[in-house]
Length: 110
Length: 124
Image 1 (cartoon, one colour):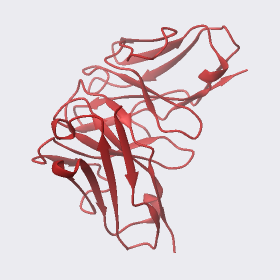
Image 2 (spheres, rainbow over the protein chains, first blue to last red; image 1 turned 90 degrees about the horizontal axis):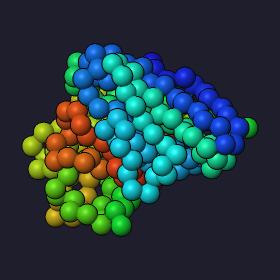
Image 3 (cartoon, each protein chain N blue to C red; image 1 turned 120 degrees about the horizontal axis):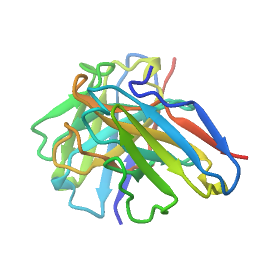
């Protein structure tokens, strides 16, 4: 059981906008910034969004992050076939005193 | 370019030990905290352990506490994970990961980049 809750799957057609949610509690998302990681098939995860809504250099502007209260969201606009991957949210938990992740969302581009 | 190369994985019997290594390049290794994160094939990510830049503080997931030991050698730009009393549920791909801070704990950090992973299989 993951500390952060994500939908196991999401899908969209090319060009569409898709959002992936990440739900937590006051001890994690409610009091710490959220990061998002993208894991393409057969590869290691890579940082996609940090500090709730910041994009590292090299990440397309189609990806954006937001946070409200104890939930965070990743939005992908103008969906492309190469966006098909697993997406994980992560943050720090003040009660567990360790980093925590969501269970991951498998995004399928139809 | 920042690069993390993990090694030392393999097949081991339950109860035995294994040591993972991770060699870092492309950044000042001694300035940053480091972590190990594992992933069971087809499953999600699980944080395993973290260590401060100077090795003064370490942290472990409850599932490995007392069995695994994280360490580093800044002179060799290397991170290690000594895994003892291995169990079948430790079977996973183990990623070496760089923190963005000198401390492994607390909010406001993120993991970047991730190494390619070392595969550990615990089976009789």
